[in-house]
Structures are given as C-alpha cells and as structure tokens.
Image (cartoon, rainbow, N blue to C red; front, side, top):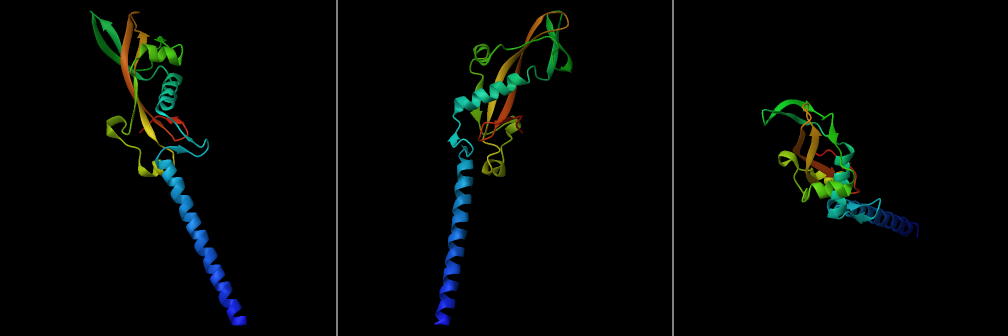
Length: 168
C-alpha cells in the first residue's frame, strides 16, 4: 500500500509539473503573439492607423520646430547658412491645422529612415510596432525676414500602446 501511495504522489507531481510547464509555454506564446500583431496588453486593444498617425503628428508638434538645414534668401535663391532650430518659426495651431496644411502627410510603414526596421525582440515585447512617416512643412522667417517653407520628413516609431519615440 505504501508503494502505490508513493507512485501516485510521483504521478501527481509529474502531472502538476507538466500542466504548469504547458501553461507557462502557452502564456508566453499568447503574450508574444499578441505583441507581434500590435496588441496593447495595458489597454487590451490594438491601435488603428488613424490613432497611430495622430500620435505621431502630436509628437512632431510637441518638438516643433525641428533641427533642420536653415536657408536664407540671397539674390532670389535659397542658400544654406547653418543647421539648427529656426528662431522665428511659425507653429501649427492644432492637430487639425497640421493636417490641413500638410495633406497626405502621413502613412504607416514597417521601415524607417534608410530602410531601418524594428527588430524582432522589440516587436515581441511590444516596444516597437510600426513607423509613421510624417512629411510636413517647417515654416519660418529667415534673417532677412523672408518667409521660408522647408519640407521635413521624420519617422516616428510607435509602441503597441501608443508611446511615440524618435525611431531608429
């Protein structure tokens, strides 16, 4: 009788270990699979393209004006004179104003600047989902007081839960 009790405890312990191992494996697989498709576990949702674009544009607006090649008009031609943030920039008044002045500014892409990509580990842990390419005008007055509108392009990386970062 004692022998059969020991065997049943061993079997029971082995079954518990197998069930726990399988549960852990399934849990990790579900977590990583969710992250790979862009699922946010904190909100229990997936951001749509419009939400990602709005997050990226608001991120760009937060750090406006960007560092750019500043131009000055000389004899009717635009001439490069330095790299930096324009001192007398014209800011966008709102998200809607940004979109109005920059129609077709944004799209979702898997590749960033110079074809860089978010690596598998970042995708698997949800710290990188996709890039939003944002093309927009930086407007400022140059040293002569002339209005300059320079095109600028940035790639904003978005996490699964919508946190923007500067990309790769």
